[in-house]
Length: 411
Image 1 (spheres, rainbow, N blue to C red):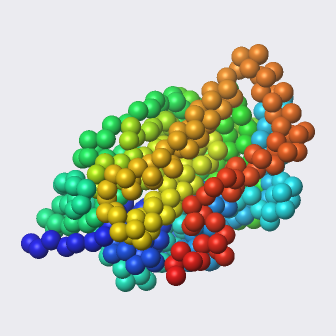
Image 2 (tube, helix red, strand yellow; image 1 turned 180 degrees about the horizontal axis):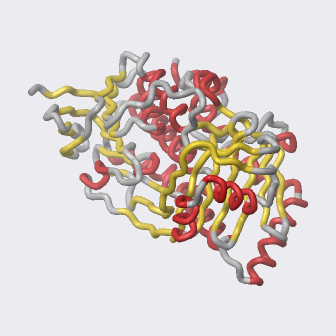
């Protein structure tokens, strides 16, 4: 069987991998995408994906620059204008988009919508070839021409292979890259609920000693629930009948949104912090969950992955312009330096945040109530937190900037 050659091979066609394929294809790199299963193309009108993402402004800019944002809006993207974070019997903090002159703080989008919109875009690009259903069974790394073998025996080579195949990345394991991290002894219970008082264009997050409860707005009266708790309580929540679950969830939300009523299925997944020891090897780069996994309490997981891929695109465009080998270590080290430290810092901040708030010790409770109250009263501090959540603070990759700034990337 003859070998096919590409500029870039991407293992994984999920949200980050598909976005990377679109960005590279739009810039006339010859791209191969290897994905085990295609995205869902349609679904019942009254169904909901229990997996959702809180899309930051930086990620929105990425999708807009890839000509995929309008499709996401048509399929269903819910903006939220404020966020309320509180602790029972303690302080709370309110973030408002109007405080910084923004129309919203971000959007909640079902993962299936994000992936479908990106696939619809990448399928219009002649420079992108999709191998699906397919998986990689073999990898040979080389700075100039790494090779992969697909499960059906096909052989592909490229200047660079990118692992975008998730937290359990097979490609990362094949490359011999180890990971560090730890489990949180928490499980996230996820589902969709109807709220008696509507979604109020707001995200809500309550901190409890077993973990945070997040309510993320979807459509006019719906919320996606991410309830991080002990594995024991998670099991109880999954086993409850719908009526008992509704009552328990409504109490946990302190009835801020009135009665909450389950719609459809419930799911659960264990939570952990994970980080690859290195992001690169000659001819290989890791992006997204293949490189790092973070606690979901701040909703930054997919946003960090999208910034990874946008930074990698910047470095590959720079390398092509200067005629450097795309898979060379000097090129890839610039990507790793730009992203690894920032990702580790965000992981560390979320880890401290989780441990500080998932604790019922009286001294800690006093400290965090003082902290929340102070942050809520100090407008500059509160606005800085909002800017960081939007992903617009500091230097950002070209794709993550406004459409006007990013347009020349495609020229």
